[in-house]
Image (cartoon, rainbow, N blue to C red; front, side, top):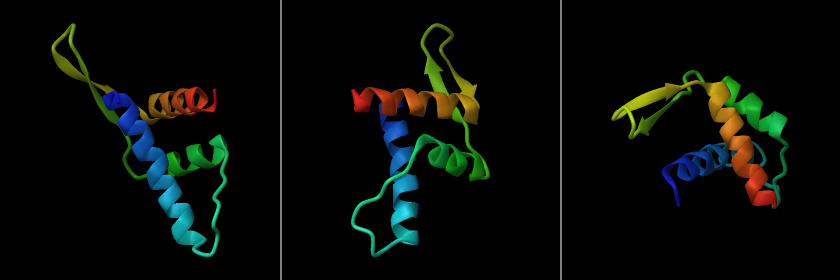
Length: 79
């Protein structure tokens, strides 16, 4: 599993854990991408540092980039 993938799986897991905590009696959880985006937007600080081999440094990415990459990850899982 790529480090990117691990990060996006982790973000989804954090959100799913929150849903389960709010709805402990529910066996199945469902959410759409807008719900996940709202969760990400509600986090106090969200950014990603991604290592770029070309410049041999970590480059910062904002929450919009994270939301876009998370969506792409979920889209791949759906196919």
